[in-house]
Image 1: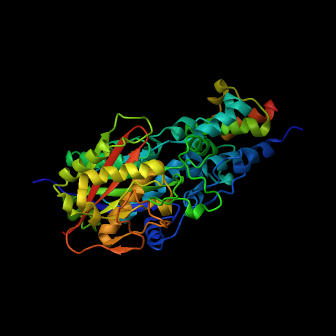
Image 2: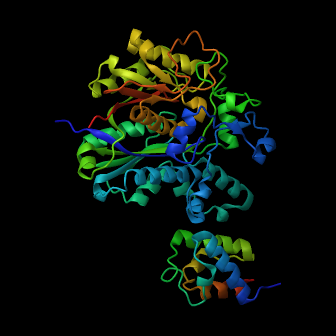
Image 3: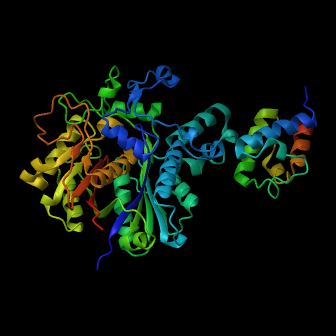
Length: 413
Length: 81
């Protein structure tokens, strides 16, 4: 009999809140985490986009000064989310060799990298601190978590731009199903609200420029959407075999039933307009879940609020679900959180898990005039989901043509 | 004007505290950086670089391995000023 994989812990630090529950409550309340950036570098560099979704709680308020000093901001967020998830799971007793970490980032330690280069230019190589490399490496967040919880069953980092953390969760599912480990802490993080990445994303016209209305800037599916809004933070899930979870009497939020990673091989940044790769990822995840299309009642969409991306995802979903798509409650939670890049899939996985657990689909804010080209049933205020076994998916797509989809089912015991 | 040994110790203790969180009063002349204060090589290099900055001295890499105790470092810095 196939082993079931379940979610036993969640943790997050996001623009909406410093933990998973406060983030979820703010999301249900229809709040926006997007604010104007007050940093002096906005004016100094005349950065064209002056707002973002900054972490609601500063990492320095949670971690010790030494932890902050030795960790890039991305790793700081990762550690905060992972510790919350681990505690939420009841700090499980597990053999270290059977405990793994799958923790993603899209960009890695960009603050550390660029600060160190500034130091090199201004003060010379002697002043470039010896912790620079372990702080900037993309596997830094996963390694920090692994050391914190003594995970010796493998610590890995998926890097696939904005699909990274959904891919990490799909990889965690494979790892658990391999039978080699009992628990995986999975998720992702990002801390790239820095003038260089903002300028680079703005150069490619990927970002919203609604500088005078930051809270209304992230508006997936709205006709007046003009790009995504950068966010920062992290999300972490404790994933565990059902047998291990039951043996220790753990609470179970939901079951992780499917995951798939595909690639477009179409264009480095543009999605395949036919949505082939994305559609295939959805189908494969549902096949692994042993689910029918009609079983899907909720989707946490990738929906970044870019003109092209939102339509491409709709096209892919329509190809897969056909008429059933009209019956699926779609939530585009980046409208509230902004786009956490390598952390996006992780917090959206948590939202999907909580939607099933609490049987409530979260709202999509800022949808004032829905794009007629995207006739989805978009949830605009918290919506009750049906009783009984229900299934939901979460999509993430990234530059490079990465598609990652994961599927969760309500846990019925 | 050159700082006294006591002043260098106080300044070095602040650097150690900033890097590692070790209380400044625990940074005493007879303490070993590795055996007593549990400072690893990466932290030691960071402390050295910050000390060079703070005291305006040069601490060559080949000298760092000779800085076993806090007294070794304080004496080196005091003499190098």
